Length: 92
Image (tube, rainbow, N blue to C red; front, side, top):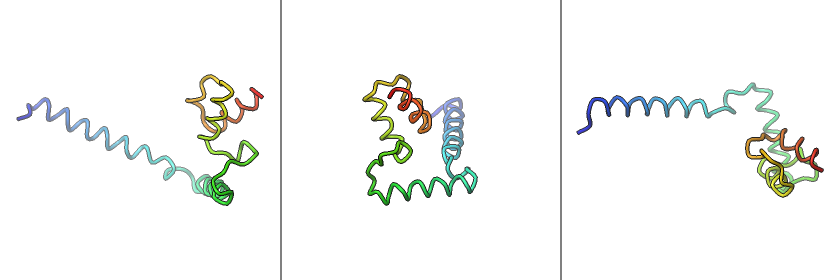
């Protein structure tokens, strides 16, 4: 049998996890124009068959991360797509 303190802690943890789960849905909370732009970028990648394009902008974050890893760019794990592109260009 769980104590009152344990029960309250479990309820707090469940509520905290529920709040975190709703906050993770970031794409759903983006403006419509931004979501549409993301869709067009995804379609471009699908048309290429998922292969990386020549331009850095055509690659997804994982592909850019791998390029940054090969170049030994520090702090790459915390960078977004735009930051990775700038760092790769600066390192080249």
